[in-house]
Image (cartoon, rainbow, N blue to C red; front, side, top):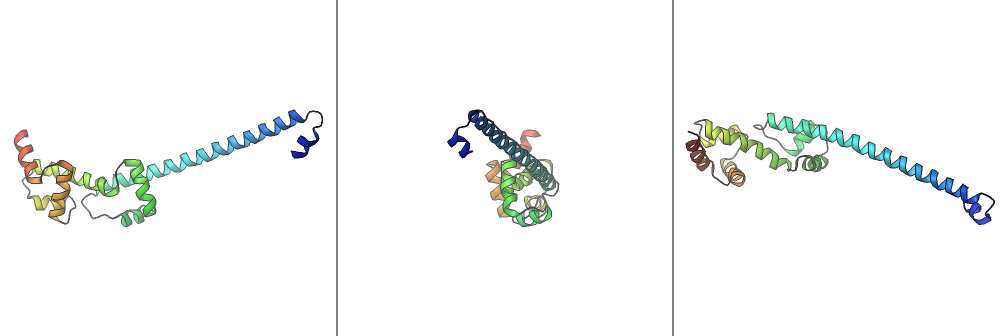
Length: 154
């Protein structure tokens, strides 16, 4: 290429344009291939996150840790945390707590179960922690939530 430019034989401009076009075509194809690979990998990750979300929605009442979920679904803990947040908008703990509190709200309104039993039933091993998380999400204590929503729906 440099010799072609330095010597400038007849037709050198056309030849250099052809080489430049080949280079641009090569770059374009490389970018397209890399982009396709990222899309395919992203699709796999989104499917895996969907599987994890589905699992958590069905097994919210059981104890879960990032390490346990990572092992169960064959994904590294750090990559799991990042992918989960990117896909759902929630951290693992935020999502799990929201699922548990959603079920607890239903149980508070539709049953006569004691708050301690509801906390245990939805997967909290501490009544204090349950109360704190419940209030953080709903802005009400569990008993106040029950009192307000049971009377307004009755």
